[in-house]
Figure 1 (cartoon, rainbow, N blue to C red):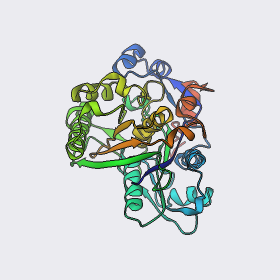
Figure 2 (tube, helix red, strand yellow):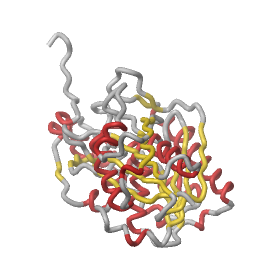
Figure 3 (cartoon, rainbow, N blue to C red):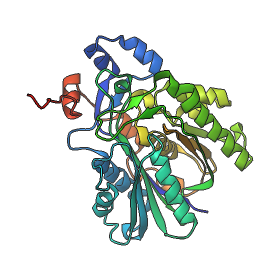
Length: 350
């Protein structure tokens, strides 16, 4: 069976505390921390973007896969913060790892499920025998208007997966997608920050699609909630994945390892993929993992992975996600954060 033969993550070292954002805007920090179950979020430095983070994550994936990058026949990056509106991100990443010139490449967008979208296509090409190896990446930088609720959670990170049929670490048992035209979150061309429909993003958007995708894949696979050791849902904040897990009958223990949001924030297209990397870091042979993404607009991709006995040999071959999350952090103040993220803009008259 086809599946994951290499995986890797990248998270910037910079962090800003939710309390520091709240203090800047005169907001109540404890209410945000309790309401979103967030303490801090990652922040990219001025020289970091979706491309550079994708390169770092993919290099970690290659260390685990132990394959020649020249054998990668397709590379896809899902993001809602591609550095260029026209020039692709994927070509730069492919060049950086020497996967050129015999490589199909494309950038994907679907809000926060763009990462799982790239994974789905990469996996499908391998299953179809079109390429020997294919890469799916989810990566995003923090995007949130000053003072907006998104600013408290919008974080940065990347997760990369190499799909193949040889030395598979986690077999793809089944996939399933669920979608509708539910416009809860969007950003028009030339706008700096996304807009959202407030509480509308909950019940008819995140919960409806996450639940629909989960029930759909369980029915398709003929499996039940108790069959899974680990479950990873999209993480716009710390509360939503716990709530949807409870609604579906999963235990907090099943969600614990893959839930990174409290000390990372919402990494958009990389959120559920990053959670999957954290699970793979500690998974044991035979473990079954359910991953369900969510992207505004709206839709969810669901995957069931079965871990093989190859996993233990590669878990320490590259930096683990929890290490990136918890160690060597650099805390910055709001002024530095605003400078790094280009939030201070001058109008044409100044």
